[in-house]
Structures are given as C-alpha cells and as structure tokens.
Image (tube, one colour):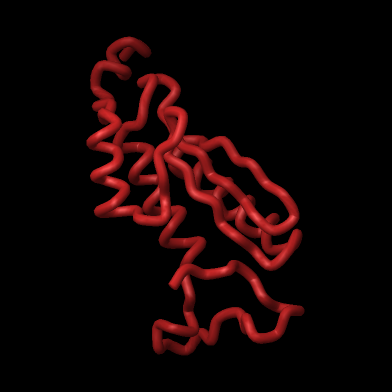
Length: 130
C-alpha cells in the first residue's frame, strides 16, 4: 500500500470539528497553529523527564510521534498527522492515552497503590488537574 493510499484513508478534521472533539473529550488540550497541544506542569526536572519518557514510550508503541517542548517544570505535547497534513483520529487517540497515563493518580482510585505523595516536595510529581 503506497503512502498516497494511506493518506486518503486518514480523515482530517476541520478546525470546528477539532474544537468540538477537544471540548468533549480532551478539555485540557487546545488547538493552535495546526496542532492539538497540551502543557503538563511538573514539580521539577526529574518529573519533567519522567513525563517525556512516558510520552515517548506511548508514541513509539503507537508508532505516531508528537513534537515535544520542555523546560524545568513543564512539558508540552504537540500532535498532528504529518502524512495526512492535519489532525486525525491518530492524534486524538494518542492524546487520550497520554492524558490517561500522565494524569493517572493511583491514590485516588481506592486501590492498593498509594500514589506519589504530593504533600512532600521531595517526591511531588505532576501537578494534576482538578
């Protein structure tokens, strides 16, 4: 199957459709300059690297690779389907998986896992939403 045939199968969403999907499914993500994007705030460099590695693992497993921007206490994930020249289901699906994993808080799930103690800055990890 050629690259051109693969591109034809990818549905590219309009700006209006992207805005509606983000509002309904990924409220912390936004559409800007052709990309869907999300900035994750962390408690420092160690946490930033952990988020980058997590996103990297998910992207490689999915074979769909975002652009990343990072600084000491944040990571920004930017997704677009370069082959399709726009935002497709691949972008939304990977964004949902990234959101699920990075925002996972085991301590709030009521299970055996306690989660990272955010009250002690030596161990604080991601600045969770909500």
